[in-house]
Length: 255
Image (cartoon, rainbow, N blue to C red; front, side, top):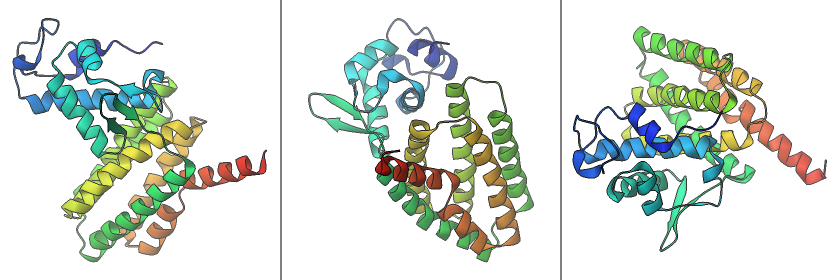
């Protein structure tokens, strides 16, 4: 299955577009602001970074070329690339474009250390201040069921990873947002995007998604029980984290 054309993506994901930023090819009647289009372009690029060989590690995304491909002006593309740079997915290089960044096992370990530290604070606030309601647990359980459904679906691997990543991000951001810590949420959001990118790079078997999905139930149960020790243990040494470290050891031994 080939990836759909870029304009197809915008047609099917943009509900409204600012006419000032469109060129003839996009015949969309409703109007919204420039920021909405920039967000949709950023979503499109995140999807391409996840599954497309066109934007593999070390390749350049050029503002003018992408604007031409999407048949829009350069302004929303520029804003989208700034957003991705802020999330650590690309780096802007003058006169060359934005280079797609990759993640080594060492990078992933550092990102997990940051995630562990921030999520520990989030969990402590949620448990000690009893901020989670039955409605919150219902929402988390619903997202957990969605993760299980995607992991066991017959979708192609690339589409499955995209769908899983989006729900996983919703799950963890939902928990973080309940803490009411805006700066922590902002930093965690960037870390989550980076770890999702790394997950795709290192994912070997689709069965790993099913295992990861089930780990989310442990988080829900531990939060409901107020078991901070269990939360610290499971998050600090996650399945994905262990697998990367084991692979690094094998590579170092020449196996």
